[in-house]
Amino acid sequence: MLDLKRVLASKPRRPEHVELTTLWTPWGEKIAAGEKDLPPASHPCPQMARETWTPLDGWWECAFVRADDAGDAWRTATPPTDGWLPIRVPFSPEAPLSGVGRQLQPSELLWYRRTFEVPELSAGERLVLHFEAVDWACAVYVNGAPVCEHVGGYLPFSADVTEELRQGTNHLALCVFDPSDAGTQLRGKQRLERGGIWYTAQSGIWQDAWYEVVPAARVTSLEVDARVLRGRGELVMLAGVAGEGTLAARLLDGGREVARSSVRASGGREARLRLDVPEPHLWRPSDPHLYDIELTFGSDRVTSYCGFRSVEVRADDWGVPRVHLNGRALFLRGVLDQGYWPDGLMTAPSEAAFVRDILAAREMAFNLLRMHLKVESRRFYALCDRLGILVWQDMVSGGGAYDAWQTSYKPTLLRASWALTSDEGPQAARRLSADDPRYRREWRETCEGTVRLLRGHPSVVGWTLFNEGWGQFDARGACEDVRALDPTRLVTAASGWYDRLCGDVYSVHNYFRPLEVWRDPAREPRAFVISEFGGVSWAVPGHVSLETSYGYETATGAGDYAREVCRLLDRALAMREGGLAGYVYTQLSDVEEETNGILTYDRRVNKLRAEGAGERS
Image (tube, rainbow, N blue to C red):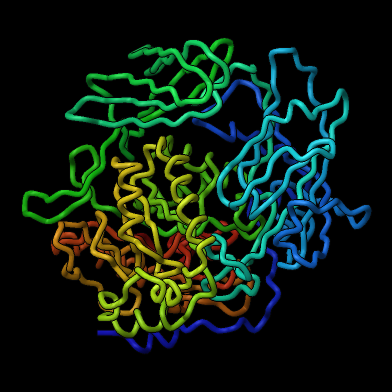
């Protein structure tokens, strides 16, 4: 039965006070105060690391320039002569920690510039420039010469800039275009007019910028795929190289060599290395065991790591489809992670902030984070690997302006519409805001790029392709493509509604009906997961961005909040006997107007442990 009172109470509304009150996390507060005691960050690419690398984060300059056709002009524009402002990279200009406080408009270009010094390079060395993420499209220049272009706001890219370098001081510049939700590109939950479940749009450099000096003959790419087959471990590595020579790998367990392999490799084609481990020490959240990898190619030395584990959906002893990790049934206790911060927006203020979120989730008995509609820093996934928590990774959503009737009201009010709504063909594409072929191409390319980027992380156990119909198209075809690319993880084709009877998980959102296990309409057995529910709201005074707040049910205080959240979690846990394979509670932290997090937006209060809240049973 639909709870209409709860539906009406959660109807999105425009905030009474448009301006957000700036909140500071403990880590962002130190950065803003200029304190230097924050621990240094680990390598930005943990699964393909060299001993030395040089960060380019810190103070740059930026300028906003109006352009008549910004969508085309970013490729050929020239930098302005004035209007430059200091900006702290890697924080977007919209984020308080950037020091700018200015939102990029769709009719503008955002320029960056800085100088940097490089060591003298020998004849056999190259300098490779890296950007972990720039939102959305950018052209990169070194000493005024174009070195690369990149389109897509969530994946890393790099360029060999050796030929453009000079002795002494070098000049680095970027020209960025980002239309946010005025365009159809991938953008997740960003909106120029934020409110309710939509958050402040951000732009430009929002993850690390860095460079490394490497040998000319070197490893250029590395994908790690560790599998468990019939009790044996199989590690397959695909490596790209520049030059020709012997590619050698060693697998280490606590410093002890357990396997090695080598192969002749040359540029222009991927080299494949396979290492077998007869009795691998398996990775699981309670024992996140990792193996170290050493890879050499000529004078180049790269370190990586892997974890052996298997994940699948199959029937338990009573015939109920369950998620199995390493052959044992595992009930998924998940929490939704939006990955937003009040002082950094999509950029975490510190690596320690990631650690605190992960440990907070573990301490509250969650074993899974659903990374929602963004691709996080590579350090985040490495920390999940090492600290022992599962990750369900969403693909980033995009498309045209969403039709509220199609993506919210109709599926909420009429559950029968889920099975009657197709995502195939031109009419369906228009209905679900997926009719721009450029968007569909970008989604497919980014989906493949995300799988390739993250499939070496043992903590990542599943992919969610589409959420609540936002830009959804041909979910069946996308599911087949991802399964072919990565058969070692679970695939959820559609989370929320508009299920296409495919994938490994029947994934539903249930905020407004009694929690229960629904019959799966698919012929093939799938695990039934309530992938969003809860959303109990409590605005903790002094820790909110707005006087207005948004959630699906409002608590009156600490005790009321804890009782209702614990009631919902206990109810979901009790449904294991009825066939529930897992849940994802909404959500880990507050975000702007949303006050339905267990942690406040500034990460200073755990609402379940606030005074008078009591403890979970």
